[in-house]
Length: 368
Length: 248
Image 1: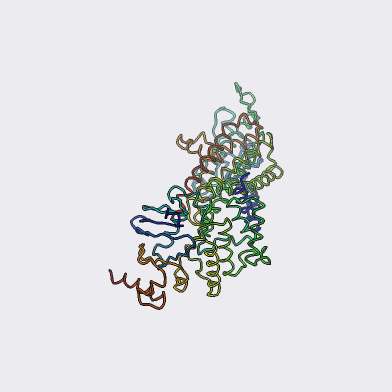
Image 2 (image 1 turned 45 degrees about the horizontal axis):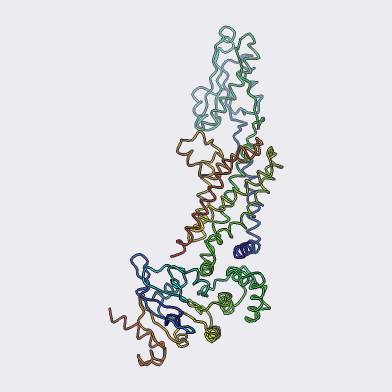
């Protein structure tokens, strides 16, 4: 192989080894992040603060309330508050929703099959409001089913949940977090790699030698790919063994695509490094330009398909978008290489373009 | 061909940064085996000139050759034939002495066996065997400087560019460093050195004085002193600079 390239790589490894503190941070940080966010980010809602106003005080109304309070979803924080305090309760966040059972609930239930219960929801968080409304309608349906068997329902929908039957949001978020963390760490790793040598003046010394630009770029990318890959294995293990996220598909395919993904992240870091002039600027640029797009536009939380069309195009140039499809596909659905060809192709293309720009930009930006 | 007697030539070499002209139509020729000095205040254009000759910076206009190669088109060949050392010494302080040498040898494409041999030669020459596996950061500045020069010469170049190689080094180390430069010149190497120490200027075979991007004097130190009726280069330099002041 290329002697020059080997020399550069060996030197980079030596730098890494000489700085065990940084290495420890590089290896521990992703795990800490995964633990923190793996528990923090969840879409499931439990223990929703609820106020219940029972104006009827009948056996029927109590039976309904009994159903509400017996679940884990609701936490009753206020009971029978007067009408003029409804708003205050919501404003003060003492409750996120108020269930109001009307005075003639029991009587109407006997005579008229159509009677109404009021549910007032604080919709300043629309997502949560949606959940609350859904939970209540389920409870109402169960109640109706138990008490009005005569009522004929022409058909019911029975869902079968595939790939994540328990709807655990960790199944969704842990692979996503792995994608976000890997991109972040790999972009950070290399963002200072070239700029540091510019600051030290050693880059000048290398440039007066016959080294080719691609040798410098690739020689720096490869050692960090190794470090990034070790990180990947560690957090994948944590995700699988601690958070119990399954790996339905091929482990080798997953590891292989991880290498491509890490290389893409590193390439981005290198590009940042070639166009900035100080380590601090490089780090900030790498952080800001990876975190937000990766979290907001990649499908990590919000599905790409529901974004405005222009953002769907933008999401295509974000490496995490493609890797999310890959890692969720492999871990949860067990898909194989055939289904992931397009995504892998996109990742490779992004890495190639980033490296090409780095190598081109490299020379022009060294001149002051 | 007279061209072949020159290691470095420059003709109307110019470099502009925006509207600022850092180097303004500079012409000179450095003979093979010569110790050629570049004198001038900070910002006079010394470093910019050297960077153009080393292929680190493209000239805006004018012509220049190094070792007979054109700086615009043949910089790959130039790089094989020159050694370069700047005032920043360009060593990796978190690597050991031996690792630094190995790295720079590797960068010049030396094979594993050659690297080993070169490293040993150099450690013997620099008398750094005891420090070979120490981190470079712990070396005294004068040693770092000698080491930086030696690593810049691992590929045995014919022409050596030194950009203020002695700044920040104590007088004793500076003297030793100049002994090293003479040693190189004796071996037939061409040494192109910039400095702002006037006593060092005396050691050069010939020197040029730059002011505001232009070369204002170019001759042997002895003849410059005669011309300005001065005893030291210090006086010559002040004269030249003051002349510029009265011009304006």
